[in-house]
Image (tube, rainbow, N blue to C red; front, side):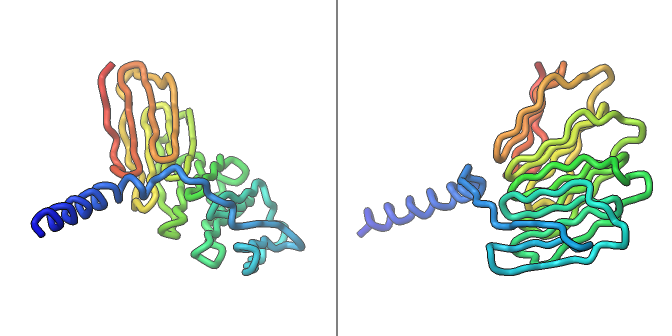
Length: 213
């Protein structure tokens, strides 16, 4: 009887420890949203069944569009539109006048990323919300990348990380004269090698870790 209880407790402990790992497993994700533009409307067909439309402004122009995994995206000269499988409606983020036609868009199965002149905006399919951070004025954009559960934005003075289910971008400042050497993303981790440090950002931790070189 004692051995049975010990074995059961061991199984429970193992399952608890495995939960954070399996939550960000590198599984294959099917594309569940199809999108299209027609007659002044943007259209999303979710899982081949539900159709959701949104009327664009007169003369509003689509600059970029794409769908992947749980997300569909349109970038116009006025808005950043995102829809997820669970949101069931187009979410519209108005663009500023100086952002029209200048945004960089990246898309993964869970994260849609828009980087403008002085801000970065992420949309998380699990939380169905926009998350925004201001970028340093006059900084040069070096990289903007997304993978399944993480996204990174790198400027000439800072690195920013965003994970699914987080409420903010996490930033790390670069030192004077510190330069970016390489950027690598896997499904749940971003690694940035600089001239002085190795920085890593994991979806499960939502924080930057560093090792001096």
